[in-house]
Structure formats: C-alpha cells, structure tokens
Length: 113
Image (tube, rainbow, N blue to C red; front, side, top):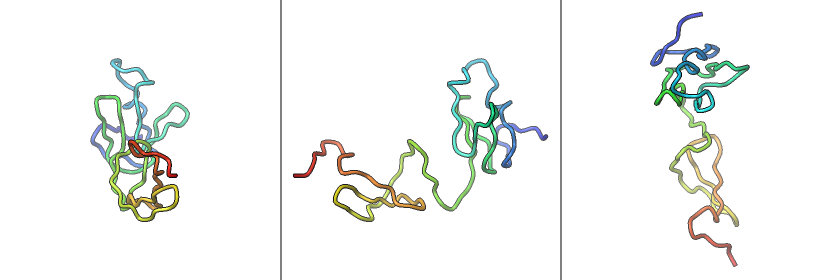
C-alpha cells in the first residue's frame, strides 16, 4: 500500500486511518471526517478520489471536483425559490433535487390564518 500524506492525491479505497487518528492533542471522538471519507470497521476509507485536506488536526475531508453539488448536513447554501406551495417553498440550491423550506423556518414567522 502506498504512503498517503496531507495535500496528496488519494484514490477510492485508500486507508487514511493512520493520518486521521494520529496525534495526542485530540481525542478520537473530537475528530470529524467530512465529504469523501467514510468510517468502516474502525478504519477511515476514502470514497472519492481527490486531495486529502485537514483543518486544525480535527476536521478531515477530501477535496474533489464534481459538476453537481451534493448537499450535506449543516452546509450553508444560497438558493433561488423555484416554487411556492401552501406550506413551504421549494428552493433550487444547485443539487439534483429541489430543497424544501417551511414557511415557519423564518425568524418571527407565524402560522397563516
């Protein structure tokens, strides 16, 4: 198996556990893996080919290029309202499907009468 380090190109199937889980300054539970990485049987495996990146030795992800945005939890996005229904907005965020946003998701929103 080839040696992998930060800012190196990685391919799907590479095991990067030795990089992500090393270090004494941070507990394993405090480390977060992001897009392009997957935890399988206490190993961190690469899912998408790209460049391995790290922030503060706590957050690890694969930087890869795709033509379509793949939404992930807690992403901050900008969208265009594409449709309005009786209870929600349908918003185009550049993904394969429209996102839904309830009317009550806005600050100071109240139920319609």
